[in-house]
Image (cartoon, rainbow, N blue to C red):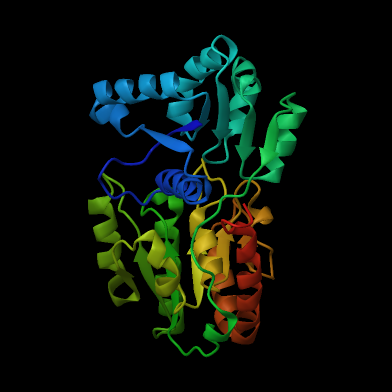
Length: 337
């Protein structure tokens, strides 16, 4: 048997975005679990822009060799490849398994009527949220199943949890460094709280790839923040728990419209770190308010300050939530998925 996987592998470069991590994680899971007589064939969408001829060669070879094909595509990838995959499914009887990236598929199907026939032609559509499942079902899409985003990383042992914290409390962001991920909201909140206190009571470490075109603006934000905030570079996915376990809380004030079930929250749970997050669609499926973190209204970004202040005033509550995070992390492991 041959199985094809079409997704962003990133060639030989290092990518840390959710789409690439999810694609490589699934590939590694299949390679590790499939019998030796099962061949896994990769098609790297990285080459669509960087080497179109190579992409076309990989794609055509995949179609010829494989009867079963798994696709993991961003919104732009879906626009380009869904019509082709539809023809392959309906005309050439290829079995297409769509593992959805992000949280916008239901909205896209609702807005673009002919996408319904595309996704309906696939063997299955795996989505990261039960809310998306329900919305797609209401739109007449029946071949949809919940499959959680997951990480193949080891969950921290409970006896290794940090249960003692002192001021300044250390907060962290662990996602792409871009305005839509709320990076400036996080920086401004930390600076405001220290200014209000008249001393340094909180600090913020920022990890992640800096979005192209945002370098200068981000540098200016850090300069204004002074010693309150530090950029710590990029951490490999398999080292996330060791990095995050030392922090008090993770901040995730995202307002990126494509947010699904973000890997950064899974990383945080695996390290036993609660999350303060701005509400995005279906985020209450992964964050249990008051149990594994705190959620504030999307339209009230100023509430981030309130929840940070609440957290530093109630350390016993935060420490008690850390064990909850480890338990929640088990829902997003390779074994469970």
